[in-house]
Image (cartoon, rainbow, N blue to C red; front, side):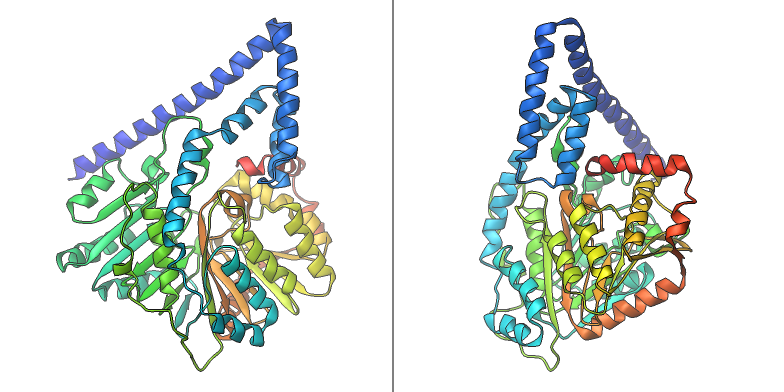
Length: 517
């Protein structure tokens, strides 16, 4: 068994090396051809000028892209004429990506009518807080994500707490288990989960696991899906990496969803790997968060999972057996607790995660507190945060002190100076890396999920989260924020001047290419 695993790991590393060579070769070929033609053929040079101009106009008029994204490609075209234009054309006319988008849209159409919004719940929410009700109406009217009354939920302040509850709920599974994670890596965490899953399969429980295709490069062996299938666990690899230049591969499944019997659902920042429960130390202490919700709201997570699971299936699946909780009536609870689970994808017209985050920021009265591993924001979000701080609202952001990606860390720190100058307060989590993703405001509303405050999460990845209008949960998130704050050190505007010149220069340069990072 040990030798087989070793052989699998060796095969995986060989595949990574081959893919890397093929990617570099494709980039090199395009660059060489463009440079050769531009240097030796005057006609080609003028054709390139015309192509660059046409593509630049197209970029500027493209409704679907953020200004930062446009700037990154325009800058690339200026530095590498024709080469930059070809990269953009390849991305916009990407057959693989377009085909996947069409398939995803079909699956969303299959499930859209199964998302049910009781209008009485929105009216009740409007009476409680009209602005929060506006956010809920946006999620329903634009994206068909309903708001539910939900009296039972748990908030986890660490991966260790999350893992303990996860095992507890898996043990209770009777009908099905759906798992969707960005990272799945063999180790203690996965080993203990797998033991429970095997036991549940033997009891007749249906188990499905969906994980992102990037895991096949370094996290699990290439034959991992086949090994799970032998155990009776249905497995789907989302967008396996293929050695072809395509923006199809840039849009990853960054979601973390675990649904059990349509009875309860987990989400948050925690992946299935040992660093998330501090069983393995990579970048100091790993701080993460998550939520567990019960009842009707689980229906939305179930449908989100099935949409992704069936994206490549030609035949429609009957979803009804998995929607065990009837949510077509009005569920009254003693407390005014509202939850809207939502998903985000890079193919839709709306940047759902960004809109929800910006709503909370713009509706802030007393405070807005944010925890994020990366801080790479567009001008609109930066302006909103500064405007809020200048309006007298307390705006605090916690980022890691020990980074997992040094280049991204340089870009994150490049935003400190303008934000600090604008009155936003920034802290770094001293013990290590903070992977939690949350925003909380005014002891009333919060979002906990998978969405980082960076370009990739807000524009390029598949994400999910829960929007809570719930004083009980919001106060728990805020208490956790204050505890994390006590373990963090504050950055001041003067401290940004102490950054090495090369760090500041490189960070600003990399900001131009942030959408491509």
